Picture: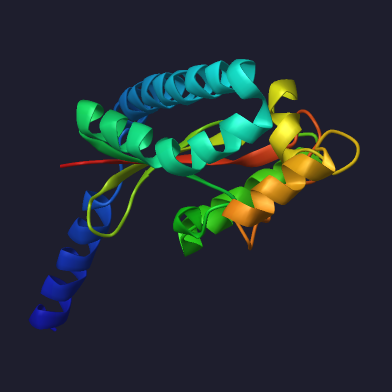
Length: 187
């Protein structure tokens, strides 16, 4: 009986150790928002620059080669791991984890019910802190992520398919859930 009691105490303590206080959630939400906004700004500024210089024919190859290094540089700068992922990913490297897919699917459900979607901060079983936030598609993203023949030209679609043969990141409308920011804070 005494051993059972000690096991129960240990389990309760372990369970309590895997949650964040409201204050910690707010702190990580603020940090996550800052990092996600900085990442979006860095990536979008570069893509807009490429679009101005040569349209999708220049921006898509640039994104193919430079998006990951830009994210990696920001990950190092903020001492986190930054990932953009989606249920309709373009690059298989960005395929969502099981947990990320659960969050994406939950966001889709909330959107379908006209509920507000907000960032999520949580701690996993290894005490890693995670920040997840929705990425909603902006109008200027439709040239590469919209519907073919409506927003995406056939030429652009062929460039996408040549660089991303298993592309799923197309067919969106403005305001659709494109995916999520998934940021893991290093200990």
